Amino acid sequence: MKIAMIGTGYVGLVSGVCFSDFGHEVVCVDRNPAKIDMLRRGEVPIYEPGLDDLIVRNTEAGRLTFSGDLAAAVAGAEAVFIAVGTPTRRGDGHADLTYVMAAAEEVANAMTDYTVVITKSTVPVGTNRQVKHVIENANPNVEFDVASNPEFLREGAAIDDFMRPDRVVVGVETERAAQILEEIYRPLYLRDFPIMTTDLETAEMIKYASNAFLATKITFVNEIAALCERTGADVKRVSQGMGLDGRIGNKFLHAGPGYGGSCFPKDTRALARIGQEHGLPMQITETVIKVNDEIRRRMSEKIVDMLDGTVAGKTITVLGVTFKPDTDDMREAPALTVIPALIGAGAKIRVVDPQGQREGAALLPGVDWLDDVYEAVDNADAVVILTEWNEFRALDLERLAARMRNPAMADLRNVYSVSDTARAGFYRYVSIGRRDLM
Ligand code: NAD
Picture 1 (cartoon, protein in one colour):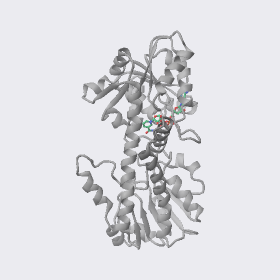
Picture 2 (cartoon, helix red, strand yellow; picture 1 turned 90 degrees about the vertical axis):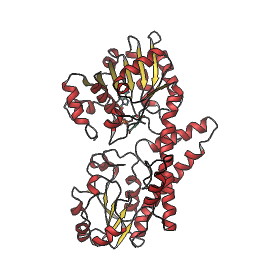
Picture 3 (cartoon, protein in one colour; picture 1 turned 30 degrees about the vertical axis):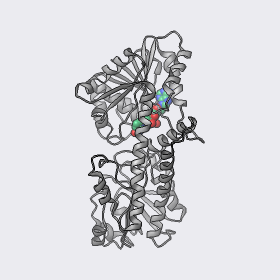
Picture 4 (spheres, helix red, strand yellow; picture 1 turned 135 degrees about the horizontal axis):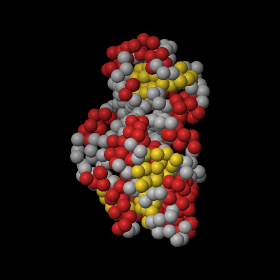
């Protein structure tokens, strides 16, 4: 199967590379020439574990190529995936479909024979029908089908998620399109991963409903964590106790500094907007957005409180700024709320993050980037764990405390405990939804 993948971001690149690993012939297209140049040189523009090896393997096998020439890639393809960004539109929370529609029009103009145009980007209900109209208007004589194939991979575990998905969702209008999608995903099908075929609107809705549900679950536990702090309960044990109930499940129950990242914030906002447009406010999702904003705001206050009400002139070392471990993605990361608030209150900030500097340098002006955690806490007044990279999960806490001016830790991912830190010489330790050492 010849496939063109339009957009080589986190989703497009991983999907294109994995499809080539299935044995398909894939051209990954991007309008950003710098990305294509890098990929052609064998460099990977994003950090995603395992992706580099897979690119080398499939490029060498001749199944995977990179191009800036959308027209040529589309002309030779039976299936064209659109995997461009759908960020929040300025002002109203709606998903910005400019990139999707522009890509659809470009694709339409380049199509010569029957093609299935598949939207992999997360798009509001009704978008695939709009894509269909755009293509019909741009190229009225060509035979084609549209399909919706929302993506559920998680950054940091993207390859495994793509190769071993909980499910693949496909929305189609014709049997012909369904068969092409089935052929593309056949390697998974043969390995018993469920492929769910449905209509366009249902497929589009499954994606938003799933992300909003996960955002709700994590926000629910974050709110319970805040109540644990007032009541003396321990949210880690509460989550454990809840998760043992098979109806609840133990995933997405880890309290933290509030969700961020490239999907949950924008997708919850977009779902809320879809509800408003249909005269049916999504009240739960709207509340989740509000509660999450409050939780995120509270994080810098927690750090200030730990340092006796002021951080002015104090040095704070932040461990981890990407929105989660194993990615370099900084989109809507909690660090982008917490760090500017601390700088605004007069703190000096040092940052250690295994992959965050490339994206983070421009987003976090005025911070010092260091490589070594122990050097980074020299004479510091506090250390803050914001992202639970493996590198920060087994720190030598005694060594850390010994190098600090005032050993205080705000552990916003609940990696350590009061007893660990007290034993190591910390005089203050605050975390999420548990008793503090103050
Ligand atoms: P991204 O911003 O990392 O990548 C988008 C890429 O598309 C960019 O490289 C851009 O240059 C390119 N592009 C835009 N218009 C183009 C055009 N006309 N022709 C060629 N290239 C073009 O975005 P992403 O994180 O990969 O997300 C893509 C979509 O997938 C979004 O709708 C997102 O919601 C969805 N999604 C993302 C994730 C995730 O974890 N990032 C997970 C599931 C779904």
